[in-house]
Image (cartoon, rainbow, N blue to C red; front, side, top):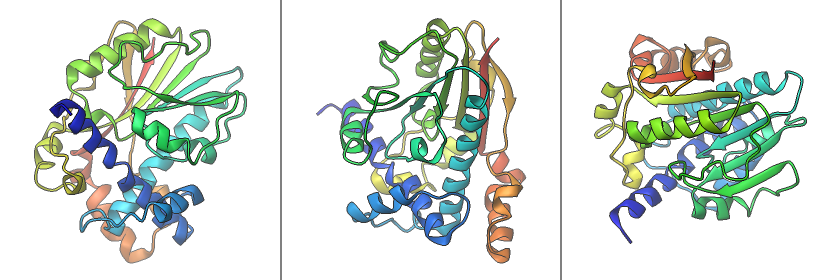
Length: 268
């Protein structure tokens, strides 16, 4: 196995960290409801490391997921059919949490992850699981180009080099007539700190990338349009009072905003 393939396998192993967070809040009855996350965590006997089991990290993972859920719900609420691509989806249950309506939905991840995903999620005519690498030249092969596209890149971009992101954006801009992208990033400072203080270190991942200027991955008509709040107060309002205070210091204050970025792009 090459170093490149081995590194991607390690990245795949990180999928249980956000899943654990969603299972945790589901048990608490707050933020979002994801019984599939509970089932998968139990089935796989996942035991989080010291950093991964922080309840504040669990809150953050769940709130980030809810922000993405709300974004895609907002985009598919408008009239007309939509194609949704949930990239680097892992074992996430967004396709069950969101009312997909007339949407054609693709959950996309590396081959081993996609195969594992098929053990829990049933495909149908409007829902497909595709084993693909986001860096593949043919990432959009067979995906309709005549519908508005919503692309979700949650917990993914920090594993992609800037040139890989630019190539992906170029392919998206070329393939779709209308496209909306929501993607979270580390800042360049956060990427440096991640070598020492990140739960992903517990599964052997140390190489991540940051992006301070969202315009550096624009391509053609696909442009940065806004920054979004990754830890909105209305979601952390659901936390117990003491936890809410600590969470907002860790993940919703000015320091956190300097580390975690949420950028929206559209083809203009």
